Image (cartoon, rainbow, N blue to C red; front, side, top):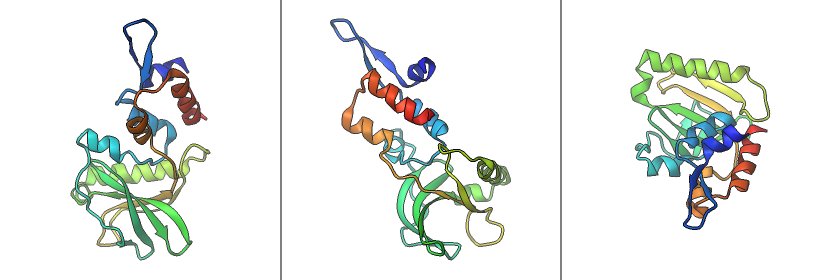
Amino acid sequence: TRVLLALLCQRHRPRRGGHRCQVHPAAFGFRDHLLGKHQDVAIHQEQAGLLHSRQNDAGQVIAGRYDLTRFVAGGAMGEVWEALDERMDRIVAVKILRPEYARDPVAVERFRTEARLAARLAHPGIVQVHDVDDGDSRDEPPWMVQEFVPGRPLSELLATSGVLDPVRVAGLIAQAAA
């Protein structure tokens, strides 16, 4: 736990002793790795200049059944959308590889491997993979459908609360590690 706290905490010394804790920006990726869940990190990505223009639009239907409803996050290699699985009548997360990477065999193979490995995992802290398409069978970029996990992103918490006290950081770590 101390290692996790150290990774997520930067010490700042106020004028009269003590310390305050602030989550280090590099911890966002570590947090996502720990959770194994697609979280809305768009605020952090936008602040870091990582948010690219969207390649898809709300209302677009992927594979004739996944209706994209809300943009969740975007990064250098893809986008994550909240969507309605019209066949199963459930909310899902759809991760879509950007078109420029869909033509890159290495990126597509990495995407396939991620989907295959994630589908083998079963743990309460890891989202389930429901469906995947590597882009070969349709005129669409590769996509992966996963369990949608609602919640407030850490980036939003930091934007509204600012510096977090060490006890609160420890609580967040406990949630991520559970």
